[in-house]
Structure formats: structure tokens, C-alpha cells
Length: 612
Ligand code: BGC
Ligand code: BGC
View 1 (cartoon, helix red, strand yellow):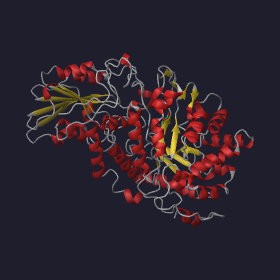
View 2 (tube, rainbow, N blue to C red; view 1 turned 90 degrees about the vertical axis):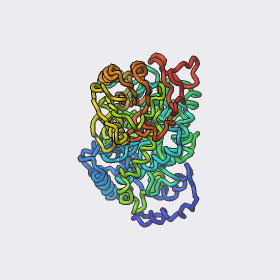
View 3 (cartoon, protein in one colour; view 1 turned 180 degrees about the horizontal axis):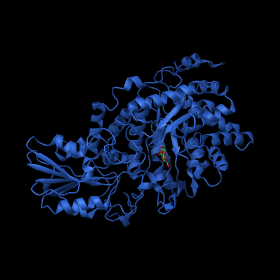
View 4 (spheres, rainbow, N blue to C red; view 1 turned 120 degrees about the vertical axis):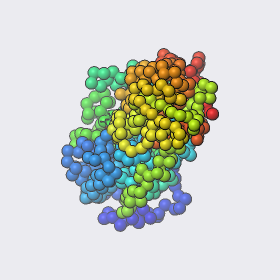
């Protein structure tokens, strides 16, 4: 059917290929199956049109929206915090439609692949359901649930007219001091491989062009979670210890630890892969022909395309011209420029014209991009499924899936004398900590803003609100942000943890509570009332004072918008089943500490989790 519809477009010389048979190609074979249509289109394209397809700009850096038409750009993204003015679903949809209209006015009218970081729900958009970050999903050990979450997310993304998410991360974070630890499902490659595959299936299904699916992106290839302490990026004079650093590891370790998620994602048919900002033994992934062409494409049989990370090629040693030459020749297919797209287009054109980049490499890149566009259904006139999903966006049904994910992600670490679950008959529960009543803190980075933000940044239920809903009719629920006022209460629920961060800004050598929250614990524990602590964090923290002060401790990770799921566990309507996806160390000096290490002596081992 797709071939017939393509021929309905004004494409000269289009030959109808037979429609893919029902029960037809899946996995990577799907992309190759579009080669007849792709080749017919490629044969008509000028060099400028091909280079346009390889160029992705961030919409916030378009100096003129009409440049989408002028340069026949192949793709647009919204980076973290790159939003339309009101950040409503309606504004997102209108923005995307405006850009697609410009793409349709080009000579060949090739639609845009439109990318966004829907990494824990479509969480850039106000009102979308925000799921737990991957670390919490790792604690669920539930691939069916991860698949369903990705499917729900795909529907919410389609509700804004967008067709591509830069997810899942299949990083295997090995040192929890890395700021992106929460983006990974687990320290164990096998769990990452299983949940990463489930996520790809949920986003794409067997047919990424179906109206309820989007194109997925496995990232960041590879060993982004294996960088060596002290090798990270220096930005504005600040040295970050891990992020964008160098993984100084053998090829055997690269394969056994860091590549497993790509093997399963590719088998599940992932359409795009994002090479990492980081390096492997001193060579940037974006510059590595070994990684991009020999391993991903030739060895693993990947037939989709590679999208660079955000200005990542700019970090390759040398000037911009040599960055482009090195990366494209290494096998990069599309570049997330994201700002200086005019310079990129001009320079890439010169590099092809002077023979520095062979035309065969350009054709290979564009063939791969077009395959994915066909597979995503973009050439079908009714590709936009937005109206189908408007009512489901942020709906109660979607929130129920997120709440299930939250309750399955919570790990009970400590429970002296069966303090939890809380009885329904308590006279007063005193909830303490600013984080108890803050959607932004419980959602973490990549929520509305790139770095996330504190406060009522989107819709949802805070943990405090969840406790109020769940408490029995005779129970009074009080709250203080600073920990005071507990005297006379039956129990204190302290909600403390990290403040939102993303990427290098989360690199942290101490892994302590913020001072404000350490003070909350100190104040609350002086009241002579039993303390139950809920920890919100993107990784295990080193907080002996919390374990000393608390009768029970729950690790709730970064649960997202549905705080009711935490209350479900506190009150025992759901007995905890979550299990640690990361080893919980005694001291920060033990990092990196992972399952299978010699001298493994953690506070709580990988897989630990109590029940009631
Ligand atoms: C991140 C990616 C992300 C991209 C687009 C980069 O900084 O490393 O994970 O997909 O930005 O926002
Ligand atoms: C963008 C993010 C991106 C980051 C990378 C930010 O300005 O909004 O999407 O991940 O830069 O440095």
C-alpha cells in the first residue's frame, strides 16, 4: 500500500513496488524492503537535496523557519527545553505542522522526521504523563510493563504530530557518580538488553508506521556509561569527571558490558542509533569508523541510520570542516547540528565536491534515512495520527500505567520491626521535606526543561497528595518542608533526595543529600516519632544518616508524575516487589562497584529488595 501511495505523490519516474506482504519483513529486514521506493526517489535527488536529508536542526536555532524549505532539511528536533511558547500539546502540534508544511513545499516534498527526547514519557510537554526514569523501570524487572510504557509514550508523542523519540537509552552505567546513571535501566548488561528490547518493541511495534507507534533510537553507542574518572568534558572552565569522557576498556569489555542493549535493540528492529559524545580509548565515537561502520552496520547488520548527538561532531579534534569529514566518512548518516546548519550544509557540500567524502557515502546515508521515512509511514498522505490520540494524551488510563510503574519500581531497603506498611488507623501522619510536594523534584531531569526544575512544572500527583488520597478517613496528614512540627504525630514520612539535573551537571563525587534535606532528617529524627524515609534519587546515595534515623527506607528513584504509586507501597495496597537495579555501596570510595566484582561488599547487593 505504501508503494501505491508514494506514486500518488508528484514523483516522476516512480515505479510501484508490491506492498509489503502481511506478516512481512520485520526487524532490520523491514528497512531494506523499502529499497525499491528509496532508490527511485534517490535517483531524482540533487546533491543539495541529499545533504538536506542528512541535516537536523533544532527548531529553536532556526534563524528563519523558511530555511526548512530552502535547504530541504531532512529533520528537526526539539532539544531539552526547546519548546513552543506556551508548551501546550496544541502548540506543539501546531509547531510541528508548520514545519511539515514547509517541508511539503520543497521540490520533492519529503516529510520531516521530527525528533524529541521522550525518554520517560513525552515529558517535554506540559500535561503529558511522566513515567519513572529508566533506573526505576530497571527495578521493576518487568519487560511487559516497559513495553507498555513505551507504547503509551508513543501515543502521547503522536498526539503532538511527532514521529521519533531519542529513546531508549541502553547505557550500562558502571560508576554511579556519572550524571546520567538514571537514564540507564541497570548496571547489569543482561537486564539492559532485555528492557531495552522491550522499549524498542513498545515504541515501534512491528511497524513503526502504525498510527500508534514512533521511530525509536538506541543510545548512546557505546560505553557512555563506562567512562573513566577524570576524563569528562570541561565546560566553561569546569571539569566534569565522567560525562562525555573516555572509556578506557578492552574491546571484550565494550562488547560484553556495553553493547548488549544494541544487539537486542537491532534484532527488535530499532530504526536509529545515536553514537555517544564519549570516546573509546581516546577516539570519539562520532569519529570512529570501527564503531559506526564496522561494528554497528557491517557486523550487527543495522540497516537504519545513525543520528549524531547534539553538536557531538563539534567535539572531534580539528576544525569543523575536518569534524564533518571525519564523522561522515566514519559512517554518521544524519547530524544533529543543531544550530549552525547553514555552515554544515555549505561545508558538507564542499567536502563532497572536492572528493573528500565520496558520493557513495552520501548515497548510503540518504538511503538509510529514506528507508526509515518510508518505514515510518511518512509518505502516506494521512501519516499524522494526532487526532486519534488527543483524548488519550495525559489521560487517566495512561496515568494508571505510570502509577503501576511507580509502585513496581519502589525498592524497600530497610524495615525495622515491620514499620511499613502504614496502618490505615493512624491518627496523624506528618510528612516532611520540600521534595514531598514537588512534581519537578520527583520527575528529575528531562522534564519540561533539559535540566528539569523544581516546583509545579507539570500536571500530576505529588507524593504528599498521594498520601492524602490514600490515608484513612480518620487520619490527619500534615506537612512541613523543613522537618519541624512532628511532635505528637504517629509517624513521620520524610521525602528527601537529589534535586533535578541532567548529563554532566549530575556528575557528583559525593552522592550525598543536599544540605537542606540532611537538615530535614536531623530535625525530624529529634521529634521522638518513628521515621519512614522515601529517597528520591537518580542512583544509590551514600546516606548513613538516613539509615540511622529511619525505621524504614524506600528507594523511589525518580518516579515521575504519579506520586500515588509511592503511597500504594507506603500503605501496603501494593506490597513492594522492586529489586535494586544498581549495587548500593557503603562508601563513595567503593565506586565503581558492580555485580560480579571481586571484593564485592556493598551495603545492599544488586537485586536486593524486601517485601512485606
Ligand atoms: C543528549 C541526548 C539527547 C540530545 C537531544 C544530548 O545532549 O546527550 O541524549 O538525545 O541531546 O536533546
Ligand atoms: C539542549 C539539550 C541538549 C544539550 C546538550 C541543550 O541546550 O537543549 O537538548 O541535550 O544542550 O548540551
